[in-house]
Length: 231
Image 1: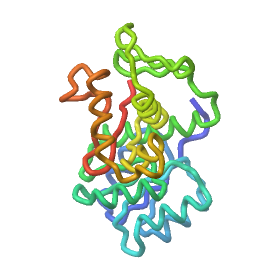
Image 2: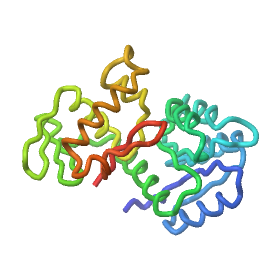
Image 3: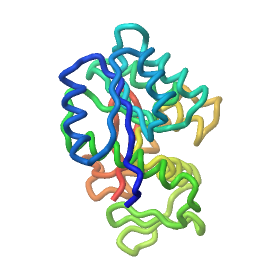
Image 4: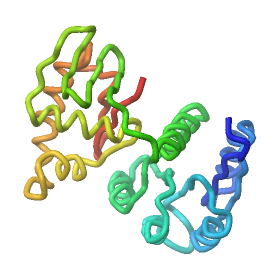
């Protein structure tokens, strides 16, 4: 374990949520800095140079989307967004602006910690050599040979299905918006063709999930995009 403690900045105007997050994170012996406005948050991030930012979109002085855009002008540190359940458009805007993931209020400690660890792990591995294989459930993907197997049985994927799966793998644990997936797999001419995603995600689930109707790994983030769960 690193001798340097993990440092986070929480930008959240609701004091109970700040206390909730600080209490949960303090148990990890991490260093927590708090801000209750967007402007203060930007200053905290600039001066504290944290490993990660947790950001509420509903701030009193400025739009959380603008905070993300300003941060992305000079840093690539992980940003975990907090959002209201009904604001799916804001979630998409936050991810498009450069956020890495989001949590829907209300949320539990276990889910919060899992999301944080995924983002910190990805940041910590950023300079490492890319993995040659990736596994989830009983699926194994050889990223060099471009082969996929399920319980040691080879699974045939079409080129588009494989590109879609490899995009999910590159962003494992994170939500990817419909638009980002369409751009990565089909290109800019198809950035609004969400029906392509629905069809091909259905194909992937039929081939890779034990129960495609109740997927455990390739998950739908309603109104936003998809997420591939690791493990």
